[in-house]
Length: 68
Image 1: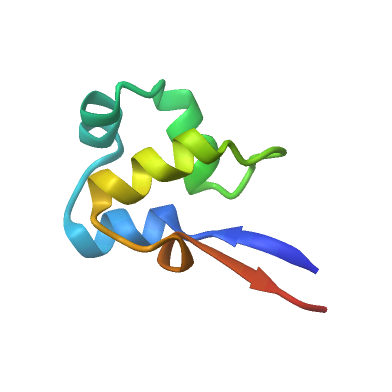
Image 2: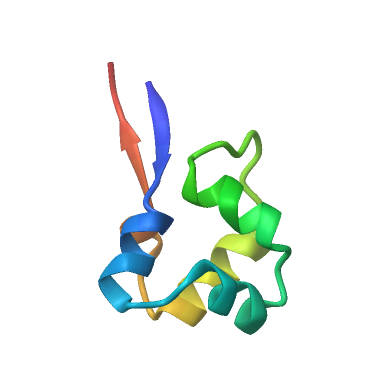
């Protein structure tokens, strides 16, 4: 079982670059890349809320639970 972060897909669908997202959210580009590559060890609720706000999406659109 795992959590899948769908940030890369949301950015593609909305036509937003990682660099632009970094600028808007004031997040480090390295951190955004980790979210896009599903390489995050701990999810931060403030970061998730900020991403949902900027991308105008629900949490379920950003992350997904996948059972084995």
